[in-house]
Length: 251
Figure 1 (cartoon, rainbow, N blue to C red):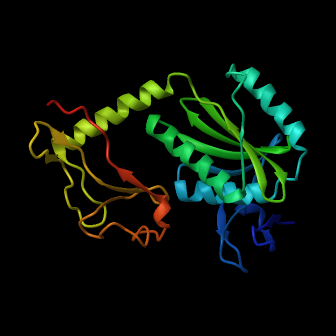
Figure 2: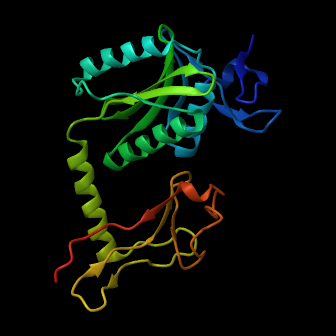
């Protein structure tokens, strides 16, 4: 008996047992389809560090969640907030499928700047929600999503208190490295480097784009301003993150 998987388009597929933990294409819509790996306590949908696969796996898993009463999931959020010692006024985000999936994906990429080993997307068999665990040195930063309507989801997450300081330090280091060695475009190998400010003493950091889907760094020289989106993976324009860090400039 194979493993039954439902694609986001509604197509029911059967994958061979040895496909557990892998992904393929839906025969109907050609979307990525992830075959869960069963453990004693959870359905593990995806484990790895490929951002494009992570977002696709999150969307597939969210489509298969059963709708839960909003009040019950808010109570669940309060329980996790107490367990994580979060401020009591911190509330989960509420939105539709695409926005919630993009939000979780963005948070994961933010975690990646601090440092991570891999991401595990799984659904505990005793829980009506999805867990996205960012694994770092045998510790977990959890993102939890529940379905409260036909196209309505709640999302809340836990981050380490020192993450902000670590991330800011890494960003400053990255900017300093770009000033000294320059950052090369992944498409045309142009060295974006840095430029001197006109009329003032100081340096302006690199200005380019990073695609949040394929993680490519792209310059403005080889492809204009990318109004049509990422030329590498064809992600939409709103998936492009502007690379421009602010440095203190001496007068």
